[in-house]
Length: 86
Image (cartoon, rainbow, N blue to C red; front, side, top):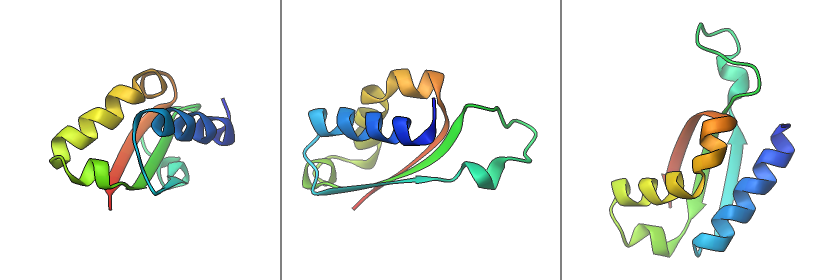
């Protein structure tokens, strides 16, 4: 899967499950290309989610919610996921 398709899937899945005002997804894979554990086809992503819904719950619970929604993508295509709730 290419990064643009993955980003589109992530945005769609999160939009269907979470109310948010804005979402940004940054591909940080290039920072990890030479690391020992790097796997081709696995991405390092940073999610910046502006959501009052997620801000109302604690950080661990909000991260769990995002991980649950993106479970399949994490198993198949995401090596690392950084989540920032604004």
